[in-house]
Image (cartoon, rainbow, N blue to C red; front, side, top):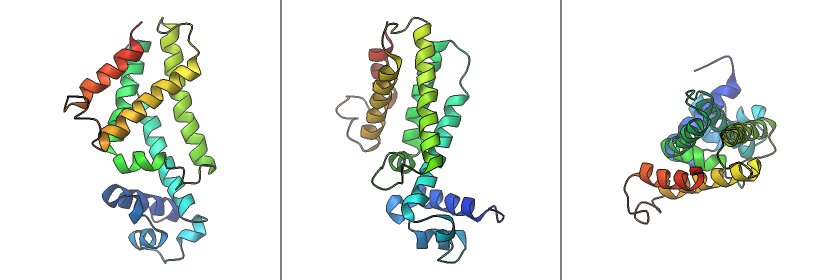
Length: 189
């Protein structure tokens, strides 16, 4: 661990606890213990639990942004499809982080780094939608609401699937099949 940056060490400890035990286990006292610092140390770097959780959620948005930045150059519609799959993969591989990233009751959404990264992720997705539209897909539809709608469909699919609320309703144990149906609904001309 990085001994030179206690704030980052606290964030990494919080991510590890979140991943293994869920958001309820992420307390300032627990994170201080995991990071090997005094119980008061987190309050030198965060105003409270909500700000710590916002920093953790920001790290999730940074990872989601990174995954969508490295897309193969396969044409605008295929790039959008790949980004959608990566969004779903991220959500299913990191269910606790994915849930936290959208828990406005737990995180300080005004925290500047979280706001910057969450906006950047959506703008990145919007750019993919806009490029796909320039290539002929859903031309004439307003880009921002289209991107928001597709994002909401992906988010709902991820949330329902990760909580077990969709596999039986979808009549498929394979999330890829359900994603294909969702994307086909949006991505057909």
